[in-house]
Amino acid sequence: MRRLLWMLPLLFGFAWAAPSWLRRGAHPDEGFTRFVFELPLGTTYETEPGGAVYRVRVGLATQPETLKLDDAAVERIVLAPAGDGTEVQLYLQPGASAKKPFVLEGPEGHFRLVLDVLHPEGGEAAPPPKPKPPAPIVVLDPGHGGPDPGTVGYVVEKQVTLDLALRVKKILKAKGVEVVLTRDGDYDLAPEGVKDLHERKILDLDKRAEMTNGNRNLFVSIHVNSAERPARGIEVYYLGTTLDDRVLSLAIAENGGGELGVRLTQKAESTAEAALADLIAQGNLQFSARLADVILEQLIERTGTTNRGVHSAPFYVLRYARIPAVLVEVGFANHPTEGRLLARADYRQKLAEGIAEGILEVLQNGAFAAANP
Image (cartoon, rainbow, N blue to C red; front, side, top):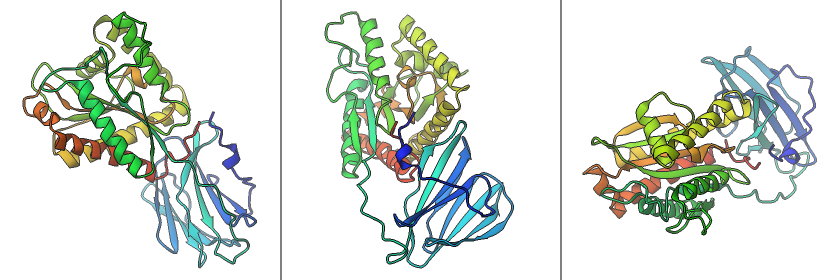
């Protein structure tokens, strides 16, 4: 359970004819009014700042209406049909300004989109100084390491993934994002005294998977692909099941290969199946799929390589995730063209920029700004 109760206002009902999923809480002593959209998990939404009018589009239908408010921040709200949903237009009072929205967990089966509108200076009350919000925390996981080289072709996977993670970290830190690396050198995460390679692999993946929890916002695991037949391109995964034999074989390989990979893949499949019955987990998987889409789009834009799509798969490293988590396959080590590209610093920089920009785009839209468990 995320410990964010201190952020939730006392949202008492107001005498206004708003739909049940839209609530308002005025805080004159603190100089802002809070609007809360309590939406079922999976509901689409989009925010559009626009000076005097702030627009929020949600995938829920309601009757068109204009709501007059006695509020220092918002003069009126217009509910207008927009496709299959509703555009909520907040007409701000002169001098009022909207802050970046953020998302909180809601009651079972719901999440809350929260928008704070600051009262004009000199209005009912000047907002008191507020502590600077904590920087987003992103976990980057360079796949493999130490005794586990990963796939080997024109490049060695463990070397490419570490180089990319360090490049992504540099870009994100320059934007004020805190980065945690699962490894920052050529080693795995298993205890030093463990000699059996199968046992080391299990312990290594468990340690990485545990880092998808705690006071973090996003988890991105970076890998390099391989194929028996010539193949190239980038694909991104989030936790789930699959009926695709190729995807299943890839998951088994990344999960340790052989009998071990099959066993760990089966465990990850069980977790993914359980998530389908857990509404909170379902919402997290939807956010993960969204993160995967954005990262893939940014990578393809910068590299021009083949878009192999976003897929769900039972990757063991993603099985514990309670935050949006994806696994990125940045290319094929054994492809004669792409493998050589992966060995080039300039190409790796493009990949790093694509991953970083995808992460930043997701963080900047506010969807995960409050993902502190």
